[in-house]
Amino acid sequence: AQTVTQSQPEMSVQEAETVTLSCTYDTSESDYYLFWYKQPPSRQMILVIRQEAYKQQNATENRFSVNFQKAAKSFSLKISDSQLGDAAMYFCAYRSADSNYQLIWGAGTKLIIKP
Amino acid sequence: ETGVTQTPRHLVMGMTNKKSLKCEQHLGHNAMYWYKQSAKKPLELMFVYNFKEQTENNSVPSRFSPECPNSSHLFLHLHTLQPEDSALYLCASSQDMASGDDEQYFGPGTRLTVT
Figure 1 (spheres, each protein chain N blue to C red):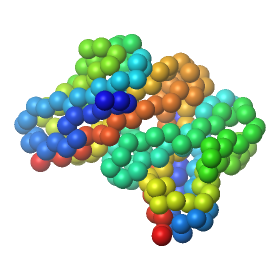
Figure 2 (figure 1 turned 90 degrees about the horizontal axis):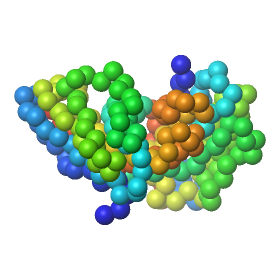
Figure 3 (figure 1 turned 135 degrees about the horizontal axis):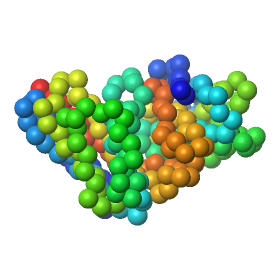
Figure 4 (figure 1 turned 30 degrees about the vertical axis):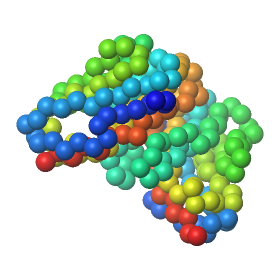
């Protein structure tokens, strides 16, 4: 069975600095999708970025980028120029590319932004 | 309203009560999901509906009963709950479950406390 591990329960970063959130996963499959979701305090969970395992190029969305290391089964999220609005819980999730549509979630990392 | 809405936002109920959670999506999506979110744990998928048909029941106790009268509405009926059922219950929807990179859109959740 697939698993997703986020080893950092909490991270803090100074405003305008860069922070990297870690995510590792375990799977025997070769094709799958990886996601980072953000859940701000008392607000809805939203998708930040996604990556297909077959794409070698790391996904980027404005200040958010990933470092996808398929062999190492690592999928870290880098947030550049951190802003106060980035404070949230960040969840890493895995989904098989086959008929199993279920997302496998990590336990989350709480990101604190220091002004 | 837009997106995914959930009511009520907060619910306190005794173990002998019967209550229902409501979710409505205004996105024209075909799939809807119920998740349980407990602190410091990965999201737990409870139920999935695709085109109003239940496609997943992740060994959820029978004291939780889902209902999906149409593709826009999803209910979670609760009865004789236990204190360990206290959690944030999230509803989500997505367009196409068959697509691997299908993004899920979340509601704000219902914070349930069982006394």
